[in-house]
Length: 220
Image 1: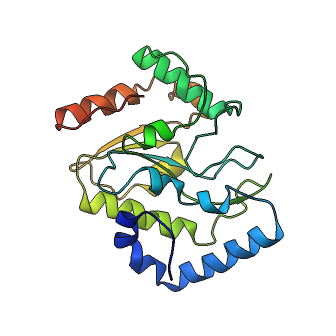
Image 2: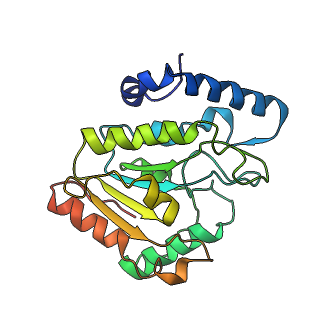
């Protein structure tokens, strides 16, 4: 199956594209786009990979679903386009960066500026039906994104994995702490951010780890 995804990822994931679950997933997703409003736009499903090649990946931030409101999701976890109001989780992320690094809260929530520096903004599920959170879960996306995480964990070293909330922590449980830095915190959602996300210091810790291993820091 010819999947339009950035070349460095395509080379490493081509075996996934040949597996039966992926064929079933493609059929499901095509049918959803034909019959329902689905986010993100079809050409943006693999946007995280377009902005962040396998070679350039230094940090992985795991989300769960794309945003399911109109105009929000564009293929990068937690990110929204310019001009779109910050969802609550994203606002809490910016608040923690402000507290941790002293950086002002930015004027827009488009995180492609992070992705272009080597931050893979990966949702576990890459599509969602409008206004129906979780509607594309358990259709095959999770198997695909598990394969992505495993490729990174096995073939690279000194990657920072920011694991926010129980879902992300469970999904990345197999990552070696000897090869990589795993940073755990509650999810930045307003329901849980006050239980330890705000104050976690993940952004300064990530940069310190990258610096210690001879890698360029992220300009958060």
